[in-house]
Every structure is written in structure tokens, then in C-alpha cells.
Image (cartoon, rainbow, N blue to C red):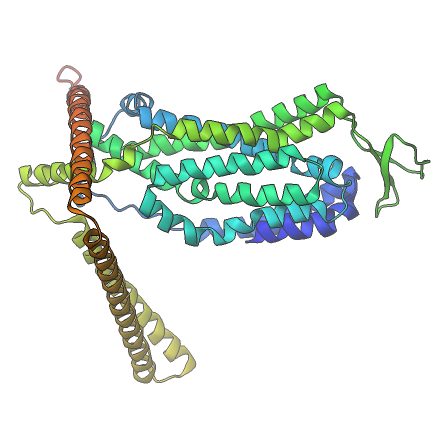
Length: 475
């Protein structure tokens, strides 16, 4: 929220025009923002509590060698495709972000005019705020991968519209709006697709690789920033970029200058008109790469069909966990039930702690503890009743929706001829058979990898156990 308000609205409209190109003013501005950020970062750090809920019912998880986890990640086609896509997407999107002020200053508008960058940021970003309400229903209906691929084709279309007329404000704003609508699935759905792939890896290898996979994800984000800065600066320098100059006296305006800005510290900033080669570079970085990239992203994600069988794989994982639990002679408890029990225990602990604090406060302020406690109990009961009422309404609404969908299906089937029904059934059976054949092939390949990984893991554990045994000679 703050980055959207400050970066998209306040900074380009009010701060940038007053700073001009004065290095001293920019340093002061960055120091002020850093001083504001530091205590907030410390607050977040000190009031963040890490919690880990193990799926193994409190048992210590097996240690998996880092090399095996790397092998699991970098030999899986789904993970390689997702990481490759994310690397390309991060590079191109960050190049667009870096080039935004330059594009607005020299192509679409004038340097620090206070409106061009604001319009591009705000109107282009509006879909990101409201889009979450539309994306997930579509993803549930058509599939996470499918809606993301379609989104990227729309993404490329919007960027292409901007590329056709990069100096026309109205055309660019329309194109950016369309592009951001197309970017909604990758913003809200990608991590769900990534999570499906992590479950797929657990099914395939017999252990989770979340930490290593997310490390690779983080490395891409971190490394891309430096790479992008180098690519952008190198590109515009090679094209002949003319950087603004700061002088102490008002110069005479010439055709080579776009404008002269008087800074708040008494200096003057000379903004030069850029050569055609530099303007072309700004256009390429801001809209050209994303036009090409949108098509490339769609092609890269087309083979990612992991969500089609992730439900079956999760069931296999659950059965393996249950078998391992029973092999240890323990009672198997479904993770959902265990999570509910843990939540109940945490709520009881929180309630006990609250009552303790309430009693101390009442003693300190001279209040009636029993009366205050009764107020708290009534508030808790009212909240629970309201929650139960909302859940009942949600269940009723879901049941009504399901019934409506059922009646609609039946009405549609009733309108079909016997020949059409037979054709529909034949098509459905053919699709199911094809899906079963694909699952059988994938399952056989996955079981082979699982056996190999488990054998490697058992070998590692055996060596690790031998190394931990005390040496009789040294004793």
C-alpha cells in the first residue's frame, strides 16, 4: 500500500520535480527515507515469530543431503521450466521497471513533469488491485496453467499496443491497462503452481525440497537486480545517452536541451534531448521486451501440466505418511484433524494468558476482575456465534450454488439428442482413458525415481550412522 501510494503518486508528482538532478538533494531524500524505514524494519524483526508445523506428527524429520535436494530440483522438468520462466520474467520486468522513469521523461512526456509517470503507474496498475477477485474463480474453472498462459498472451498484446505508438499517451495507457490485466495470473497464481510442483517433487523423490527450491527462487530475485542494472546502463551508454548536468548559473536554452529546471538548492539542471538511438533503447526496454517476453512466457509454461495429477500425488504422499506412521507402531491422525487440535490448544493457551494479563491489569487499575472477565466471555461467545452463523450461511450458499449448477447440467443434457449424448459420453471416456494412460506412464517413471532416491537416502543415512559411532581405538 505504501509503495503504491508513495512510488506511484507522491514521488513522481511532488518529490522528483523538486529534487531535479541535484545529487545532494537526492542523498538527503534517500537518508530521510532510510531513517523512516529503519525503525519499522526493526519492529517487524522483533515482533515476527517463526513457527514450523511438521507433517510428521512431532517426529524428527530425516536429514536429506543438500546434493540430493539439488539433484531432485534440477532434474525435474516442471521445476526447471518454472525457474527458467521466473528468471526470464524477473529480468524483463525489472528492466521495464528501471526504464520507466527514462521512458516517461524522454519518450512519453518531459523530464520530471509530475504527471506522465503518475498516469502510467496508476492507470496501468489499477487492474492489480481489483484483479484478485476475478483471477481465482477463473483459475479454478480453467486451470492455473491455462489461465496464466492466456494471461501472458494478453500481456504481450497490451505491450504490443504500446510498442505500435510509444509516444501516444492515450494508446500507451490503454496498452498498459490491457498488459496489467494479462499479468494478473502470474502475480496471483504462479506461487500456487510453484507449490503444486513442490508437492510433485515430494511424491517423486520421497522428501521435500521447499527450502532449496525457494533459495533458488530468492537467488534469481537478488541476482537479477544487479544484472538488470548493468544491462540497462550498458545499453543506454552504448546508444549514446546524454545524462542531465547540474550547473550553478542559468544557461541559455538551446535546441539540444529539452528543458532547464531550477532546483530548490539554487542550482540549475540541464535536461538534454536524447538521440534517436537512446529513445529506441528506452522503448525496447519498456515495452519491446515485454511484448516478446509475454509470448516466450506462454510457450515456456505450456508443458507445465503438474496440476492435472497433483491431487493423485498428494493422496500417494498421504498414504506413504500413514504407512510410515503405522510401521513405527503409532496411531495415524489426519493432518487436518491434527491441525485443528493444535489450533485448539493454542487458543486455550492464548485465553489463559489473556486472563492472566486481564487480572494483573484489573489489580493495577482497581477494576472488578470478575465483571471484566464476564464481559470478555460474552464478547468471545458473541464472536463464536457470529462465526458459526457466517459459516452456516456460506455452507448454505455453496449448497445452493451446487444445486443450481446440477440443475443447469441436467437441463442441458435434457436438450441433447441420444446421438449427442452418446457422442458426449464417448468423448468423455476417451479423455478419461487418455488421462489414465498419461498417469500410468508418469506414475511408473515417478516410482522409479522414488526408488532410486530412497536408496541413495538410505545409503547416506547408513554412512552417516557409521560416522557417528564412537571409535573403539580412540576410546
